[in-house]
Image (cartoon, rainbow, N blue to C red):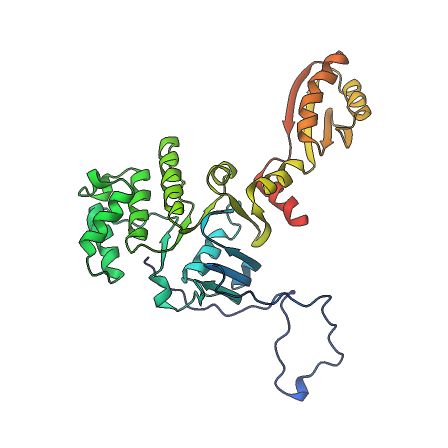
Length: 350
């Protein structure tokens, strides 16, 4: 893992930040501060999970990138899911020890993640941006990573890591000749060269074609089967669904949901959905839909029929049947709220 830690940013108070301790009686407020509605949860035992965040926040000036996030990650594959700009890279940076939390606690393998070099030797990081010098061969790049980790046999460790990611045949080529997928794998080899128990990957599937994506997923599953703790970020729902059994949903720097992926997916699917429908007779179709139990409401606005439903599966089955029974032809059925941002915003509100 390479990179220079950023200096701690000067904390900027926010509306939700607790007041600082007073240093003299003259600074006492004129009226007593109200007591919180409920006490904050006690910090977890940092030794019980490889990765622990407790009320962790990180801000850059007036920009809050991560706000009061708490979760734990154990062995296996966990997906950090959220739209671009949600704060995923900031969270991974704090876990890797590249960024200090502005508030709260981040521990890695039972130790504070910030400024603990001994912990860094037990974590591997694959950053989002490609940072492979094109003039180096893949073998030289991984060997340098092994030397940075202080391994006794950097050549042997590099050979094993390169074989693990199935790049032995291309190891002595310059990385400038590598495809996007090969560069991702050589970065992973460099992160694995010291055999870390914790692996962090930031958007590891960006730019990969379908075959390369499947290869990377299979590789990460094999690594997880050895008992490693793997946390990877993605803004694509399908990637997380196919690889991770557990998911952490991040939106606008907050933890929106966490747990088994199937349960989170049900929350996403069962939320209210809005559809815009164009048909041969919107009024007749609206009346037929309202009479059923799959639709929460319907409105005719500007020549469009907007329908709201919380039963996505039932609505999909009943709409064609009701249209046919009413003698109405469907020209277009289009969801109006299917962006990831709308899904995550709904989970935050929950």
